[in-house]
Image 1 (cartoon, rainbow, N blue to C red):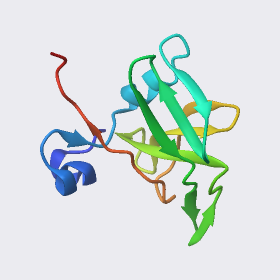
Image 2: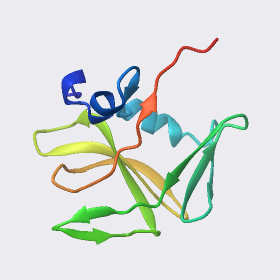
Image 3: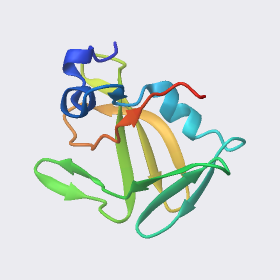
Image 4: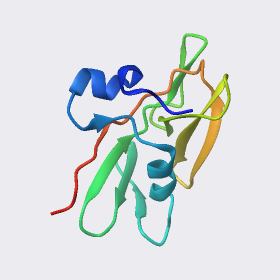
Length: 118
């Protein structure tokens, strides 16, 4: 149920070790004991105290209409849970969750680069 490397947009466009995040990576980001979430500049800053990433509140596309821009963010994982649904990460100013939704929604991806710690 995961994307093959040939179907992974991040890997195809950016190459190397870049990929669409796994559902487990998105699940880990929701772990409140490891990461802090803070709303900033129309998006979410996620930090572990040493490193951080920023996820813009980019919204999504539904029936050719943009929705929730600057209000919330939804980002696809690389894993489907059925032929019509896939896992994604959602956040707004007060909450975050990992869930699944219809694959026809136009959600952005936030590529990640997997590297081994030194």
